[in-house]
Amino acid sequence: MKKYSLQFELILKISIGFILLIIILSSSIVMFTSGQYNRIIMENIHGSMENAVNSIDYYFEDVKTPMVMLARNKNIREVMKNYTNMSNREKFNSTNAVEDFVQNITTFKSFINDIIIVGSQGFQYNIYNENADKFLRDFDFTGEDYFRKIEEGTVRLYYVGEHATEYYMHPPRNETVYSVILPVRSMQSRIGYIICDIKSDMINEILDHNLKDDKAKILILDEEGMLICERGNTQISAEELMADGLYENAEEQPANFLQILFARDNYITQVHSQVTGWTYVYAEPYDNFNGFVRKIFWFDFCVIVIGMIVIIFFSRQLSGQILKPLKNIAFMIREMKISQQSDQRGTFYSESRNVKELSIEIEHMIQRIDRLINENYLYELRSRDAQIQTLINQLSPHFLYNTLQLIEYQSLANNQENVTRIINELNYILRYSMKTVKTVELWEELNYVRAYLDIYQLRYQDKMQYEILEKDRLSKIMIPKMVLEPLVENCIKHGFAGNFNHALIAVTVEVCEKNLRICVRDNGRGMSSEKLRRVRNSLQKAESMGEHIGLNNVNLILKLRYGGEFGVWMDSVEGEFTETTLLLPIEQQSGVTLS
Image 1 (cartoon, rainbow, N blue to C red):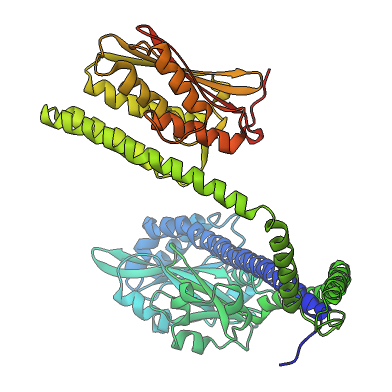
Image 2: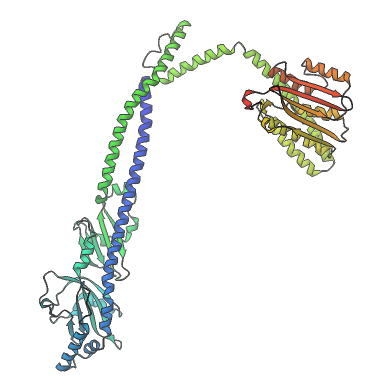
């Protein structure tokens, strides 16, 4: 397998990491920016269409009042109903009455092209008949296609899409209008129609404003889904949009960056008019959106390429700085191996050596150095640790045996509540004793002693009291684990010897000449001067056997760990007290400031 140089490996690993980071960051920014841009554009399009529909609906809604006024006028209803039976004089008078009524009805409504009154008996009249291009010819309005649904429908306003004004004698060229038709009834029979034509230029101008220079297409569909108007981009087929029902699935269109980027169809949105019942469909090719998205995409691509070049350049510089000390290390390893008459001398300067091989050689060198350093004192250290661990292990069975005796006593007394409490305390004590650490903080050891003494308080039913006096600033001092329990046990076992009337154990923690001193004092029977001498002699010799095995073990642990000037001291007056004192140094890692 081909081996690459250290510099190539470093350049490759550094470059790949940073390049992937740039690609992820830049792609995330592009996708977020493009998504926000497309969302804003689509919301603006839909909002513009809603505004356009509202504007168009305003025109249709505004003609309702004059049309209803005409439909309710008595003269107009009379001429519609009886026009065939009227004499010429009556027809003339009725027409004049209609003209007087409608004279100012369309004032300030410039968007109205004309209002036509059509009677079922042949009466026809339009408001703007003074204009030469607004003369009505004899025209059958009811024969038009858009009148069929009106004939079948109820009395309400009907809205007709864009159509030509063929009913004038000389209609303006290419003139189209949108119409609003109101059927007029009398006694449940239809007597005519009021037709209001709205200039299509006004409505188409509103629609064209949303077409973006004919890049988009707008369709208007009536209540039955029939096409009544289309404007804009001729390349978008209205038949395809209607045939496939695409406008009905506007909510299911592509929404994210990648879908829009690769989409080849049209963005479609629709707005429904509450006035006319028409549906306005807006369609625009996604290519119109993708122009900006593609610019961002190519910009992102250029940023990635430039970033790759810059990263490779700086990776090369950085790898050179990293390799310089590594080569020095390799040179030192080579010299060391030469001095040891190694068979592999001179191989570390080869550029084909990779990082893994060099790291293995460095690790081997460190292991050899460490082995040489540790050989001088490793045996002594292991021996001391083994001796300390042996002494600690001697404490645990002795302590557990006494605690189980307490539980047995409470069980025989049938005091279940105390048994539960003792078991909970024992659970805490066992978990603490099984901790694998060699040293603990002072507060942990004191909590252990509290749990131990609580159990004995339950056993002797408040005949024994205890107090622990300790300053908060000393609670973080590190001490060996389980060195206080043998002292407290000694008070209970030897100090009181079963006589617990008014028994008191006091634990005091203080600093003495930059050392930590812990005193455990009881008001028990004490000991004679001869017995005190024997105990002191045993402690001075650092024995691990004898009557007070627990005290001897603690004393030996402290001397092995800290030196001969530290350990356990005892003082006692027969019939008054016994006081056991631990003296140990305050370790630097405890973080305690001594005043």
